[in-house]
Length: 344
Length: 270
Image (cartoon, rainbow over all chains, first blue to last red; front, side, top):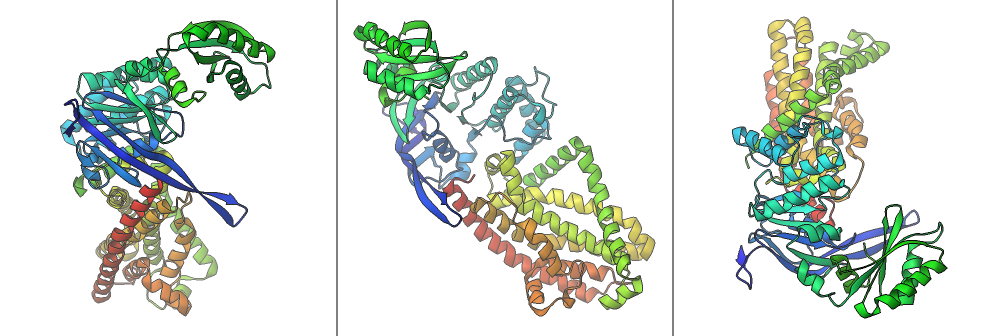
């Protein structure tokens, strides 16, 4: 472990990490075309001891690639990554002894084993045994709430997604790791399960002193749990700071939000494009409660004009507008401003 | 982490699996006799036990011969499927990354987690066939033959572990989603003489059979089927050959699986 510029212990250090994937596109029966995907284009960041660090980005941004490299499951093409001072390539075995990993909440366990049996098996595989293992399994089943739900002895195949996510977190904590790496831990979860998991992540970091690296494409989640966030887009980190400081970057903006129903046959992309043309600012669109939430980030002085322009576009496309709101900027706005993209 | 812990975890996994899957547990008991009945039934369609002795040019009991062959064939298949195919099973269930996060090499984890399943399977088959062999050969002769079969299954497994680990690394390196071994297994068993003596095969096929570890395991099992006390010298010889082949295949596997693991981790196949 090394100290950063502010004298804070850094548990994860990533320097100029590069990863390219080679894929082949089939062209007929025998021919295929080689294509190189630049998943990581030299990213650098560090994670401090006892913090929840969020890697925020859309699908395909490079989040899972980063997590897999840090988990020693993928070799980088260039750069360096260290966990508690151990090189993830040269000292992979040592890294594995100090990390807990959850790569997917919906699979990764034996379907015909119960939650308790799965944890016991993986505990043994990771070198735990006897009384210590039994106590650890009990403790974790209780910590993630599976014991309280009375499902610890149910087969994994009968688990709901929320239960699977809890079990996945429990496995990540089996060896009492100093660093916990979680890839999209709340993906697809119902709100109560997602909230429980988020609260737990904060507790693990702030009370137990573990370092938590979490990837997400959910900006609300990043705002809720992360002490610091790195926004990753197309293999590059485009911003890294605390959530508050990131939001200050768009403090000179307000977010115009319009809730509307789109008529059948009009692609969302068309609306986004037309709104950008009309207002001159990037916009985004999200499905919400059967309709759509349209968002445009604009300077405060131009909110009125932008609103009328946006409403005109929606009216022209026969969209049924239900609600118009002007809000303080969020992390989502930061992303839109930094990337000029329409959101995740 | 010690290999003992890996073996223990593999054994625990098997116990849990069969505890929760009663049908699979039952099938494990029935399967050896079903296979034996099928082979013997087919054999009787083609000729009598004396015709069989004439064909194999040995004084062997056809039932004991096929018990031995069945046990060896099923054990060999079990190793090849269990180690070679397990990588696909782990991949499909999403457990592969978590298996590899154990502080061991991929090949070590795959091989040592499998051994308990194999030993459990062999033990159950031996226990099932023991009464039949003792009924035919008598108690003392029967026990000796069961001992030889146990030895053949155990020593025969050692080179097969490396042989199958090579396939496992091949499967993960090429990102293949089908178990190549399932196409090769029948050929491997045929060339090994599991159900048709190897010396009756054409010359080119006999050359292939020489490099297959299963050939020597089958030979060892056949010695157990000879009427009366089995000869000690050829048994020692085949055990020596199997251990020699084990050294070659396992060393090769150690080097190549490491390479396959690195390639898979470069490609992001895990």
